[in-house]
Structures are given as C-alpha cells and as structure tokens.
Length: 533
Image (cartoon, rainbow, N blue to C red; front, side):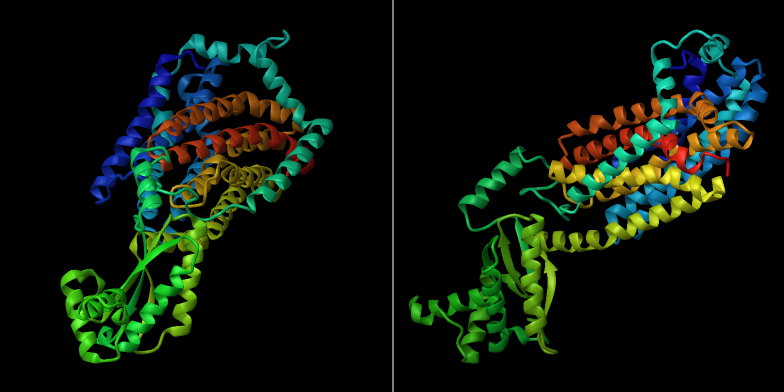
C-alpha cells in the first residue's frame, strides 16, 4: 500500500514493541497466557498496525504536498491524536468491561488486553510520530500518495471505488443505504432472538466435534450409562447428618427427580450404596434393596460405602453429592437439569438439610452459563455507554455520536444473528468477542468522522468533507479492516474450537465494521450532519 520500506518498518516495529512491553508487564504482574489470552498479543499487534497506518498515511500525504517531515509529523499528530486516543480508550474500555464478569479466565484476558492497549497509546500515538519526524518517508511514495488527488484525469482501479463511496453522501444513495441497514437490522434481530447461552454441541467444547477425544466420548456416552458430563447437587447437613434415614430418603428422592429429566442417563448417591450394602448382608435378596429405618443397618451401610465409595460423602458425614451423569452439556440439557434441581432444593431444603447447586463438570458449566447470561446484555450496555461518552467528548455533537455508533449497533445485531446461523452459543469464548467488536469497531468511524467534521467546520459541504476524509483516512480504514480480518481469519482453522469461533466472529465484525464505516457514515451524515454541528 505505501511502497515505503522505512515507514512500514517503523509501523511494524512500534507494534512489536507494544507486544513486547505487554508480555513483559503481564509477566511482571503475575499473569500468564492461557488458550484464551494467547490470541491477545496478535490482536494488540493488529490494533497497533491499524493506528500506526493512520499516522503514517497522514505524514506521507503532508510530505507529498511539500511539507517538511517534522512539520508533517506535528500536523498529523494534532489532527489525529484525539481521535486515536479516543479509539484506543474505547478499545481499552471494551476489554476492561470484561472484568465485571465473574469468570477468572475472562478477567485474565481482559487484564492482559487492557495492558496491551494502554501500551499502544505510548508506542503508536507518541513514539511513532516522533520516529517518523526523524526518519521521514520515501519522497517517491509520498508523491505517489497525492498524485491521484491532484490529477484531473478520470480515476482508475481503486480510485473508482473511492469515487463510488462518495455517492453514499447523496440523497438517493443515502436513503437506499439507510433503508437496507434498517432491513438488515430487523431481520438480524428476528434471528438473534433464538440465540442460546452455553455450548450447543456435545463433547469437549475446546475441541472440534470430529476430534478423536469427542468421537471416543460420544461412543462411550451412547453405549454406557456413564459420561464425562457430571452434574452434582451437594446435600449439606450437620455432622453425622448423612446417617439419618430422612436425609438419605430425601437424597434418594432428588436422584429420582433428576432421572426423570430428559438428558440424564443415570444418578449415583450415598443412598444407592447403602441400599446395595443392606441387600448384600441378606444374600442379595431384592427385598432388602431398600433404605432401612433401623439406624444400625444404616450405619453399617454407610460404613461399607466409606470403603467402596469414599467419594460419596466427606469424613464428617455432613456433605454428600447426588451425581447425575448427563448425555451431554448442551445449553438446553443443563437448563432442564438446573431447573429440576433448583425446584427440588426450594421445596425440600430445611435448616438441618440443604441442597446446594452445583458441582461436577456439568455443574460448573451450568453456573458459567448463568453468569454469562447475566453479564451478556449488561456488558454490552457498559461498552456502548463508554463508547458514547468518549465519542461525545471527541465530537461535542450528539448527532456525530449517532453517526459513529449506529453502524456498531448494526454489527452487534448481525453478529448475534451469525452466531445463531452457525450454531454458536454465547459462552466464555464468544462473550468477549461481542464487546471487542464494539470497542475496536468504533476506531474506523472515529477517524472518518473526526476528519469529516473538521472539514465541515471549516466551511466545506458534506460531500467535499467526506471526500477529504476518504482521501486522508478512508483508504487506510479499508486497508486496516482487510488486514485485521485477514489476520484473525487464520484462527478459523485452529484445532481448538473456541479459537476458531473467535476467529470467525472477529473476521465478520472487523469486515462489517469497516464496510459500515465507509458506507453508513456518509449515509447517516446526510441526514444528521448535513450542516456542521
């Protein structure tokens, strides 16, 4: 794009420095990279390149018009620093809001990413213009950068594309674009209402459905009564309380209630072990396969269970699990089991005997789904509130804020519709992507609207102002959008499923945010910013 080696090397180098600082600070603060946060350094690098490309493009255009490299760096810094700072702060807020979610792995990801974005403020907004003021750009590349703008010949190649984008600021194209956006928003919202919380596939969510582990797990689950998805309800009593007949009967009733839930294969509890031990003392007679009211018989059964099944109660006999083996951990299955267990707990808990949810792999998954469900819309509300405040501080116009934010709203709606179409649920892996799409996506609109407003306030009409914004930042917005999408689309081929899901969603959101900024910003400006605010 630039055909300038020195400026390209500086942009990449400053972004790499940001990644190195981030990794060092993360280690110094005692954090580490996990399968979720391992992708954050790549994302920070891509964000750094996007902001660095804007600075490089501004300096190159000023140098091409005959400005000295030092003065060009100052001009570009003054024009784009506030927009860049606001964009990075929006990115940081998008990450920081994730810390409100009470899931440790998401909080670690949020902290790691927030550190990286904070570092970018120094490396790409401050350090890069300083370095470019010393090194400068290639004179030939700078001259080529402004050659098409100065020539009177009809545009060719990509020049026709930029000329076509200017038409979206005209009444006819703006009306059609806004109508199409409203139609997409309505259709996307109708589809997004079917979005589910949690995993929608059986097997380990970290691996693909056709992985060796998931295929073996599916065979075991289909042919045996046990599975790797265990949902445990803890029965808490006073010390020695699990020896009581009433407690064992209530635990047995809970096991029966869970067995009636579709998706439960079998249940295991202390009552089963005591019943089998009691029958064993009477030559295995099925007449004794029961819970005796005789305390001595119950004591013997629990004693035998302590040898054969020590995992069914603790040493003080005050805590015992009732374990349900599920056919899968899909969102619908977990929701049914949680509903049945919670209803039983509310109806049968007493001060001496409490039924507590939940333990086991499926129990933890169900608790995670509940946290994700509560945090989903609250997180988006926080992100949009922060982005709106930052945009208003930058533009000082509520109409300009709407122009910048409405394309993000459309992208969020269509992203949820895409998740429904691809069979993805909102879970630990996909929840951060929705917030990141808003925080990072606003970068495009911030640069475009900032330059457009500056030109309008200087007296230029909307069409001329948007043409100048396209020439100064629009081409780089398109370049950065394609570059970011091309970088994260590679994750779609990861053998780790949640990384692949993150790659698909980020690619979609980066691309759509870029298109929305280039198309919807002029169309909305025609109705909201026809006159300079």
